[in-house]
Length: 201
Image (tube, rainbow, N blue to C red; front, side, top):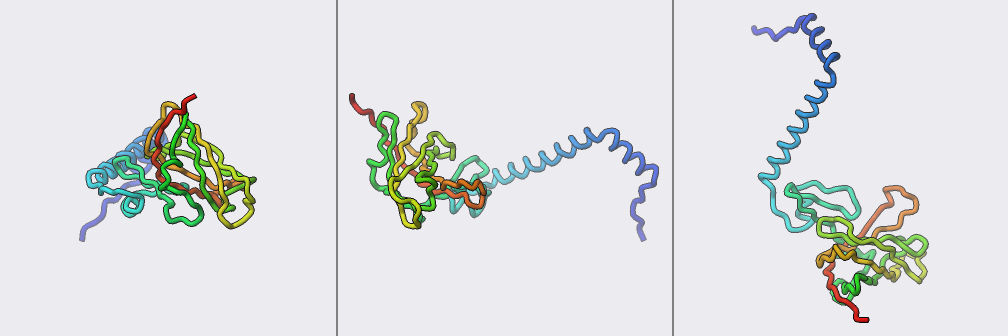
């Protein structure tokens, strides 16, 4: 019957002493080894990546970030946003092209969202590019009673930077959360197509 390898006490002492004297080198070696494993895993996944066209397909195969709105990344760097087309908490007329007309770098948007989205009659709103990067920020406001569970009309005006005049953007309405508690964070998102026009003086 075979016998296992037995490491003598002097050998163990040598190993322990070596690690104690060279712990930084050992730690760097371990971290480097783990990084190589992770990179190799990502490379293997990238070589066999599945093409996806929207957030739902992406979420079946790849990582979804716990954000608001949710984002899904593919191994080749594509980002897919979870849109709010059927969400009854807000009403945005995506078919009205005049809503997305940018005049002199200003974009005015009107819609409705439930009262719980507001705090002190306002909430934050953003414009993202297709990679989920913010390029414009503003505050949505209402003149109506916002302390209700019904839909409340709002209005936003964004100022679009000169160097960021893109056509395909993402509108994000972020729930105002004065408590700062993450469990109350939320956001709604829609893809929009911007058209640019200059007003004559």
